[in-house]
Image (tube, rainbow, N blue to C red; front, top):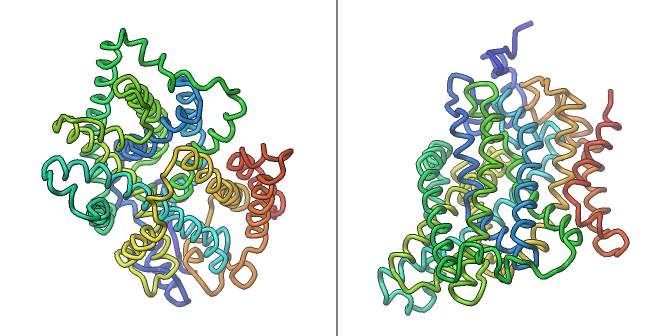
Length: 481
């Protein structure tokens, strides 16, 4: 019998015979979806550190941290919850990433293996639409800063009817251009923007410290109304806030194999993630706390959205520097985490009609249809309503994927069958893994229903953690061979 796959260092690769075997059947094997061979990989520890730097040193995380202050937490409570949430999500991120590093395959292939070639449409489309949703939100936030720069340089621009939406359209095109050119453009963006982001973030801290000193001392920065909290019980907000923090990164954790498939040395993604995520989370959260608290000292009002803070300055140089930070921070998160991830899903599900580049166009159009300017209207809805709802879906999907990968198959796969659509080891029942889909959907319904039962609201408040653990345990038990 011909060898269909072979071990090459830590990677399992298809042989030429394996590719021919795939092509004998209905399949999703294309230039965009095929496994990346070890010789074609180019991501090291540094790339994963800079990836997380780009993801976390972002307007979204800054906004999440400052929104927790606006919701009533103290500065040290917000710092603790953010770092804990963004660190916990590394568990599924690393574990699911092992699939990409071993087989060179993306999340849609992992999902197809777990849920079946037909059943995969449910979780992958959920993930894709989440990516489109976040892509739209971050484009709107970034466009506000882009608008501030254009208005500063061209004062007449602000008087043009609909100029804010013109800025939004232009900023969407910038994101689209980077995403359209794929992983090489993303890697280049992350590598060269990371030091700039860190520098510009430090500028925000320096500004807030100067403002605090002018107001009586550095300690004033942590004694403002917004930094001191509103006196509410920490535990009443702990689990909803933690769930929101996890939900923010859970989308990228779910499809981290899209990035680990580029790993060129074994363990690079593990070391890069463990170094990059916790440190960068603490740093950008501190930036968010300082920026929000500093805005109260400087202007008498705490601004949780950095774009609104920028608008308070009269100095053109400050406006441009702060706006550049917002723009760059948005680009480094928005393209790899949202646009690219959604496009990979669409191009995999509809591989015969959509190439990756066409899928980028589709994802961009869908993101605008979410009307993102309405979704970021206030911090409470941004943190708790939006992220809380997303966590309901992300937890069970992640738990089922982890159980299938590590308990059911123990990360050992027949690679040609991963790409087949008409049969093979992962075809299940007519293309549907009824057990996996049943566990996932049942948990969606149960957890979401708990939001409407006061005695069970704690389940909804901890939806990601409970959903992930419950799905992992239940599916592990029912799929045992």
